[in-house]
Amino acid sequence: MNAKQLNQQYSIVGFLSHNGFQPASKKGDNYWYISMIRDLEAYPSFKVDINKNLWYDHGIGVGGNLIDLACKIFKMEDVREVIRLITCDFSSFHPQPAAQVPEMPSRNKLRIVKEGYIQDLALIDYLNTRGICIEVANQYCTELTYSNQGHVFRGLGFKNQLGGYELRSKGFKSCIAPKDITFIGNGGSNLLVFEGFMDFLSYLMLPVFHVSNSSYIILNSLSLLAKVSEPLSAYDSKFLFLDNDLSGTKAASYIKQMYPRVIDMSMFYSDHKDLNDYLTQNRKCDEQKCAAPAI
Image 1 (cartoon, rainbow, N blue to C red):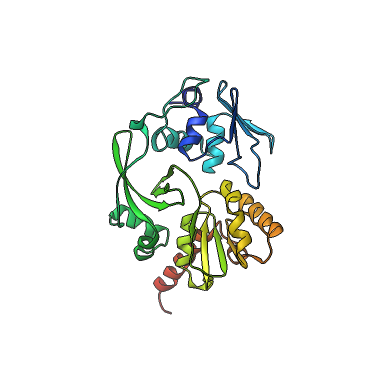
Image 2: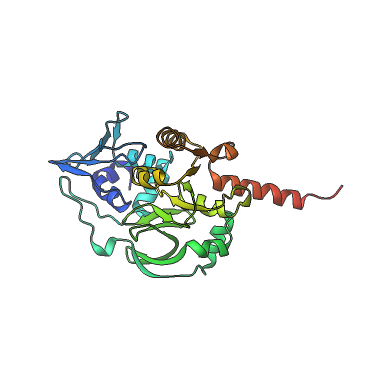
């Protein structure tokens, strides 16, 4: 399937729904969302015209078709890879006729078949490549066996507050709706905020970053930042472990402006994309030092 065919056959609203984004309101042919491609929005300004199957973000004056949107959500520029993700890994939404609310047949949804401790060797190998030991992963993640279009797969599941899951495996990134934040309360006076659960697991692998008496929030998407205003106000000190990209920097700036006693921890891994990149790169350096011949 080429780009033109994909844009004609697949619904943007269906794609967004599958990835955990629901409209805030519907006005005629226009579905309005809290923008999922930028941050710090309190009111919906992201519009999808279901008749034209096009989107437009009024907050930044940018719009386009399904592939344009998927490139931004997946943070990829490789159009071929984005098409592959939509048509294979992310094709659990059904092609829709224009001007219809997407109905996703149950046979096409990601459906959980079984969950349990992480034992699959491919998943353990994937964790190893991300620098995460199985003992840490099993404390907070589960091995999900799930079906997708009649095929059965296994992935790492990370549960959110509404009972949905972030889903990961090698080369695959998705979620099982509903999408929400994850809160892990330990009764401490400090709150640590992470963008994704791999960053949270990376933190657990890095004692040098540990903050005592802490609870944790994993956003699972920066578009959910508005949902954490109450805990951000409730805790004495906030420690941010966000990504070192434009979105992460904007989110950190916003939190620091809105709340007192905020420490941006990204300064300690500023040469890396995120905390997991810091973990994996430093592990490689340690391995190279160990492998270096003695002189």
